[in-house]
Amino acid sequence: MRNNKNRVYLAIIAILFTLSCATIPKNFGPERIMPSSILVIPPMNDTVDLSAPDVVWPIVHNQIIARGYKSPPIAFVKQVLLQHHIHYAGEINMYTPEELGKMFDVDAVLYTTITDWATTWLLVYASQTVGLQFVLKSAKDGQLLWKNHYTDTERGVAVNPRQMAALAIGAAVSPYTPMARRVVDIAFSRFPLSNYNNHR
Image (cartoon, rainbow, N blue to C red; front, side):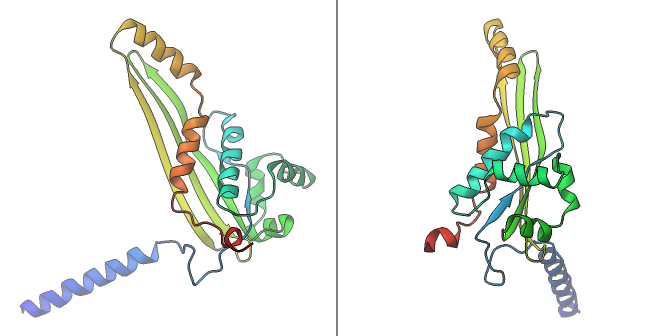
């Protein structure tokens, strides 16, 4: 009887393991050809700060370049998108990764979504949060190659009136660029270096 129970438990564990593995996206590996060129499209903005995409886009693009991938310059991407009457990041979704791949002659397309971008302060407490989501898809067949989502928050507490005043000013004017860079660096910390960079 005990052996039967053990077999049932093992079967359940095997099923759960199979289901959990099925939800893991295919990453770069021997079963997929690693892209040598990646199009970094304008970020989607799920926040109320309209300036956020202008900060995030070049940071993400520079990250891809630093890892050795070929990537069309942002100015060129803007020009081509305007030629196709695309004025907003959301309009890019009208095109499939395959269509964008042909449009820009790239192997993969990187989609970025700004999920958090806010500064909050209340009396003696202030916080600044940046959250970014990344999805990389093949421009050959639209398959998911890689994805990640990372959010970071900085907090501050004041213990006297002078610190309270400095905290309030800092919460109002503190730039998001350093935090955005940190979020991108962490999110891409395990993103592989390009083979193109290693063999040219």
